[in-house]
Image 1 (cartoon, rainbow, N blue to C red):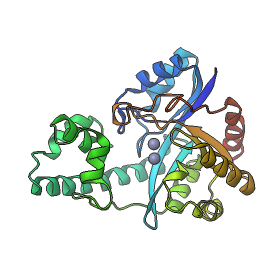
Image 2: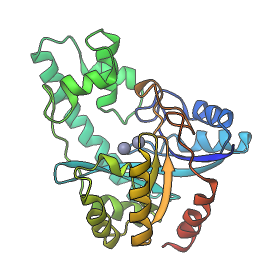
Image 3: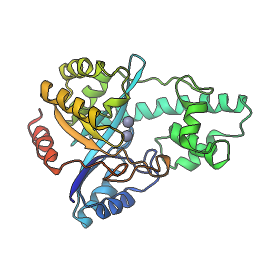
Length: 282
Ligand SMILES: [Zn+2]
Ligand SMILES: [Zn+2]
């Protein structure tokens, strides 16, 4: 059955499939439209768009920007943005530089814990400028220190874990502003990640005032009651409804393009309102 997937990562950030490989998987899953939403980087878009044209899949330019709201990391997706916009590119470069300042500090902490790892190894494995913790996790896996990416985060990399280093992040309002300035539609990613179940409505209301355009209601790990709650929040606030798998390849091996953990189905009908909003700048 035809479906769409508006949240996908490639080797240009922390995914393990190239943009062309992601398109090939999407084709197999009957995905008719998709968005590549790499973290802080847009370099995968030309390859994805070309592969999409050849496969008859509509490829929407996207991005995922991390921000901090209290103790939560809040991720803002951006759709249909002018991905060549120089101001946008300068902001994204700044975010990647913040990662480059943080990563060596994490490596230092890991080495102090007796782990044999260098930042050079991590950069080589990453093969992209958007180097982040998932790449460190993969080196830890490859060297046998942990059995999975999740274990690497739980033991070493997550907030409160042994080698955690806080990252400089913009506020959600700033992330929204940057996407709007590049004529994109900002959407709150995976609302289930935000602390405090009851806080989502208030957060979305506040972010709507800052320019938020939608909520990622459909997501690989959302349970039916969560999907219903976020749908209700979107409808009450007049926000767009989107959805995606957050496919990463080997880093999240249980999540597939288009189908997530098997039960995901993002309806095709969600695309037109998003496209219309982008066209009218609303
Ligand atoms: Zn995210
Ligand atoms: Zn993501």
